[in-house]
Length: 259
Image 1 (cartoon, one colour):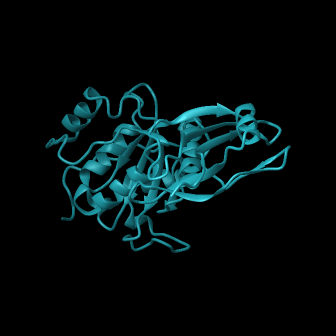
Image 2 (cartoon, one colour):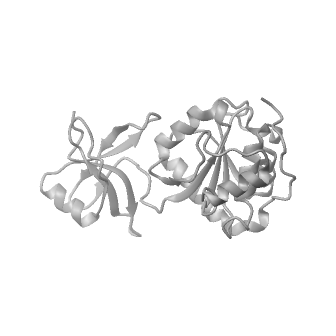
Image 3 (spheres, helix red, strand yellow):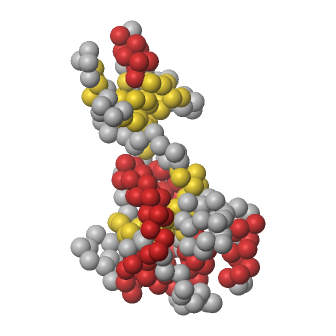
């Protein structure tokens, strides 16, 4: 079933509030063209004038696109269903407990993979028995060297996993890539504080909790909303300018404190 002639995944606005540019692909009927192209407002107006149709599309947790609504044009203004902005894709490292939370890591990639440049370690890619060796491998293989935002997916046992602590520590170390990474935590639906108005610092990784208290990091509930996630990433990227709030003088974990 064909939704429209073209499907829009991202767009950006000019200062006057009108569309400046869009990222889109062709709707081939049974599937979407895998070539995503950028076009400006003048091109959109020309295509609509020639009878072409447009829709906004969203991703689900399986990574499949679906139609969220049609574009309309009254001769002066477009109306559309909200999609993420066409912004620079931030280099993002996702830290998580591979054994328990791989399903959410996979869903994160399916939902948001086109909004970021993923710098994350996949299961069994890197292993080390000590923090210095692990961080060194992350740097040598360029996982952390140019990471600009670190996202921690937080399940019930994330707080007691030493590799998560090491990854946060490395991202907040200025010596790693001569920059600091922005930092956010996302409470997964399996976490005891998910969906609550308040949360307990004791249910979070200690290093993340310290940076939440200082104001450098932010904490959110898991969401499939692409616009929200992009806003969270951008806010974390901007907060790197507040590096005086970073807390990273905590002794690194030397063992996992739960299974």
